[in-house]
Length: 296
Image 1 (spheres, helix red, strand yellow):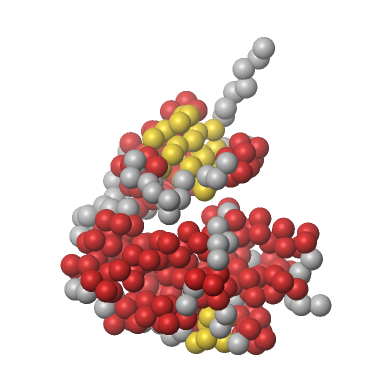
Image 2 (tube, helix red, strand yellow):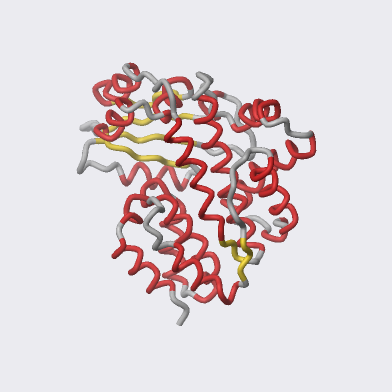
């Protein structure tokens, strides 16, 4: 029997690789491949098994390594290579050196929270906003600590260090700690009744007052949310990932009005943001998406 050649590389990274995962942890798996040889069957299989898959071409990973992107540092210290075609992934990671400073990236990470200017005034809307805050908190502080030559990617350890850096009270620390639980519930579509507006407002206040990340949070009634967020998604300053998250909030608000096939299509897009974020840079794609989401 001819053995199937795996012409890609894969690596487990994050909490599973560090062996400090818990019920709220993502199971992160990286795929690296040559342009035109996307390992879709393997990725689909792993996603069905509960893995959160990221996919990059070797060329993209090499570029990220050359510019000092912290994702490569994450792989360097928090990954276990499962399969490495011609040792291409390990070669990229081994020659990586972090940048001396990440001031521009920190500015961009703080601007990410601008997508929370409008939040649907519903429990699904609160869940979406809490998930965005969880992602934003971790990414902002990964960069903030890297600027101090501290390379940490564990949410729990980042929160522990943040308590001292931002002079957080025990109550404020406990509130931010809950972001991991909210993120897990949101991504697993669990019990939206557990999301509370007052808890969300409290966490937003911590970001504004203690972390000095300034953004407005206007709660918009569900009947007006589509129109407001449809305008927001077209703002040119937003990158592909930000537009993706805005589109996700719109989908959440109208999902009950959509047919089964349309719901399934958009859930597939939302389930793998890293793969689809690039397409959200294109206005024509966004326009087509929004037309399909318009309530009939």
